[in-house]
Image 1: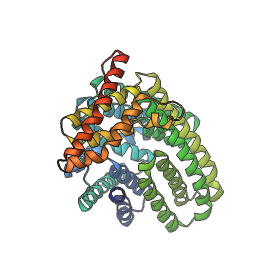
Image 2: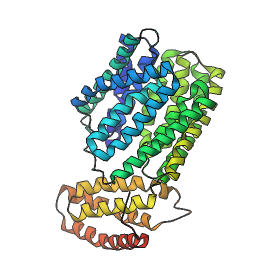
Image 3: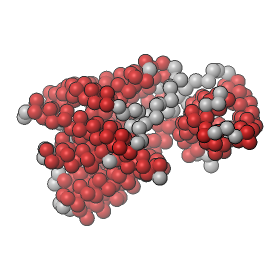
Image 4: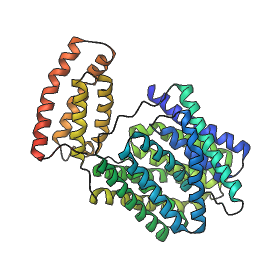
Length: 418
């Protein structure tokens, strides 16, 4: 029920934003921009406070700059996007506040890729509507979290060295440069699909294994979504009310299923895209070539993200797990059980690449994940109240994990790093 509640709180701003914008403005691009920002902001784990609305004018400036540069020449817009995303990624080296600001500025840029705003005819009016769409989306996200009581928990402080964030900024710059180049040369007007794929695969990757796993999931999800989208493209035809209703249902299902695997989210987005085509008059058999093109563009974008993550200052999955395990053990030993549960969740997420290939290649780090995961019921008990029996079981289980972790660190002959 808690997961369903969070999914509803995260998705509720999308239909609210769509209905509001449709009521006051009929431009599909503006409506899609608002919906995209509401969807991405609603899924964000960072705190969403009223102060965030004050960043909308700054986001408007970013939108205006991006739109004008793209309208003047793609090369200028490409450079603006690459520099902004790379700087936002590297900004995490300066602390959580800088990281939050960077993500808030990147959000409207991603929305602009999904729904480009053309300032050619009436630039000030068009950009004003785009700014209003972002403001409405952010406001509905805030209201949803207040209404559902699902305000995001404060993020766990990053213990990664500053140079790691800087190198991730470099990786994102290389990935996006490749994606823009390949997208615009090979896929023509559909180049945003390559860029969006490169961004979504690489933006939150914790290690090179994580980047590879996300790339595989995105490809499989896009393939499954293409099969669903093929059926929808024929079934919906040109019936716009049906297309809008199904689009919202598909995205809502993807928002909930995303917790079970990123492939579900990629599939829902691909299927939703087919419904979006029907809204702009591309339906039936005319939509099929676009779906095939999108699948190829998604694979190309994923590769653009994986290559820099694997070749440029790569972060090894095993190193991430050693660090996450040490952090979890430290929180438990200090009696911070609520924090330990959150660090355990982060450890499991970081272990996903190794868990995916465990049948073929088992690693000692996964035994730590198993041992600490088995302690979750006791940790939840201790987080609520003191329980001598639970405390005894936890302390007994920590010793072997700590000893094996120390042996693993010594074997690598280097400090534990991310």
